[in-house]
Length: 330
Image 1: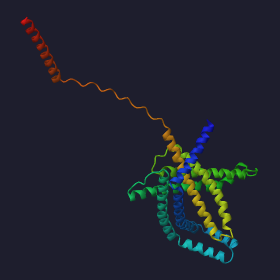
Image 2 (image 1 turned 90 degrees about the horizontal axis):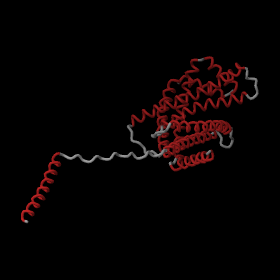
Image 3 (image 1 turned 120 degrees about the vertical axis):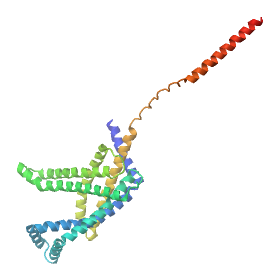
Image 4 (image 1 turned 180 degrees about the vertical axis):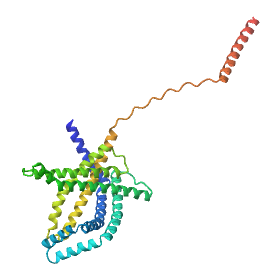
């Protein structure tokens, strides 16, 4: 039984890969990558605006940042960074408005392309919807994904900030290997937030009925792969940034490749969820045909009964008359 299950799991993986190829999943991944990078610029503006408000409200943190810049980036580079930070703080309101508007526009395009990609993987025909209603729905999905992303980042940030303190309170900070265990625990915490995000992607984006248990399995698979890609991408981007061969474009190229790998992985998990759901639906036994009750014989109307009696009487009378005439002649 276990060998059969393993073979079925392998068949599901092969079927998902074939579905991804047949439905042009790689092309959709390229489109998602483009819109993701396009959305990064307004996100950076919005982040700069938020940082400007935070630093403006905390002069001590701002002065600490300037002190670190003067120590780590002396000379013209430090002066340039100092002026850039001051300019961002002064223009924090306009940067926030432009960044928010850009995030809404590019984010809606990103959601629309991601929905089209998941529909294509599910082999669903494009649906004609009211464009205003469609944008409102996409805005709600974007807000949900943004909230899920904030939850994931919040869990990761909270764990990074308080995990070492918790170990100190428990008196476990001097034990060998606790730092490594702490790192693995942080990955698990971040993965829990990722499961929420991918569950929303797998259930809310495609125009298909996705069973919750299958979507949860697909979300767990997507979260595990995403965490692996995050770890690999962190080291790859860091190494590429110092590459003398590719120059300053190495880091951007590494980010581009990483985003495309993430998009392909998400679409593969979508295909795997679709194959799992469709196989479970096809495996359900067909319901036996319902036996229809036999139709009752048609009821006799009074007219038919009367006509039958008259006919029977006529036949009987003719027979009696013929018999009488025959014997009378004898």
